[in-house]
Length: 219
Figure 1 (cartoon, rainbow, N blue to C red):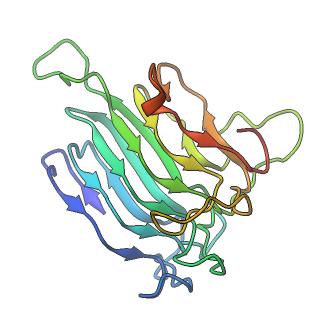
Figure 2: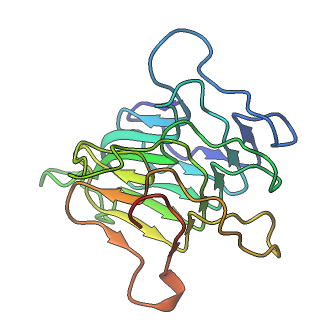
């Protein structure tokens, strides 16, 4: 857990978080006590931290609401970054190690109250270049849609504002930089779920697009 307003400039990279060392079997975090858990949590206004690259954040599935990454910071003075990770899939195509809930869940927004210092970027979180697939949390799987934050590859909820999501594979399997994409690893809920305004999914250039496909509900 990365916790606190002055907790900044941490880099989490090259780890297995929720699996064995081979990335093929689940060893969930959160085995002590009750309640929801996540593989990685950034909380309590922590800012400018980088999760990635090359973490495998999967297997956090002790209960059905355990997520891969939980960014529950409230306001931040500078964005956090989730970059270049595998979230939900294993290290091999045969591994079944999806996180129990969503891949990434956010409740984060930039500090912009008009008093100094304010967030100079006007972004709260960048989610870039990840494979976010095979997460097991479904939602109501029917009509009407659940507006209370269903499970998804990425679930942007709470009071979130100004999250940027670009160049991710959401619902596809990819096992190595030269491997072909597989359609067999859709998230059990949405690809991306958003219940708050003012976010950017993709961008104005082809270099920013996401691939969102194969998920059990909406893209």
